[in-house]
Image 1 (cartoon, rainbow, N blue to C red):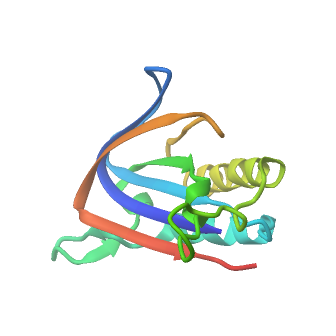
Image 2: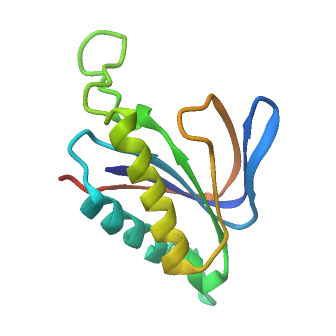
Length: 148
């Protein structure tokens, strides 16, 4: 399982020109699910994201979590995080989990973040053609990965 975590001032996800999720200051998490992932990886990565200290403290050091600042979180499924471009010019997605594996793990990941933090958690729509808009704060972007 792989997550691209971005510290944001605001973010929005749209499907068919309709806003389906929106947050203020907090985190946008783009989540890719590997075909070998299980609930164990989803729970571990959700906890890691929820407690990641990438927000500034009084001394301007990245020392606070999204929970510490009372922020909001948006989780968006993104199978293309497992795109392999090593050969040729077209990415291969054989490492990405099929929907019957990735959708339940995406839902579990989002629910664990909600339960762990008690914060607002917005999501996209699984497998939809989405438009994600965000303002990266810093910019701060962290890539986290948990292998099966």
